[in-house]
Image (cartoon, rainbow, N blue to C red):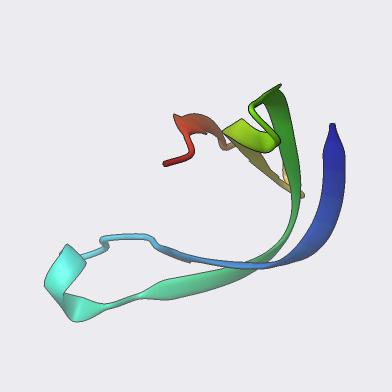
Length: 58
């Protein structure tokens, strides 16, 4: 497992996504599920504890 932190820019889509209303948050990234020498899963969580996503790494 690898853990890191940084800045995350999220489009709030208010009033629309095209308007590009971005919020900057502190975030943590966790890389996990190693396979053949590479991580295959990334989890990102924001500093407000309101947003977490997990995705495959290709």
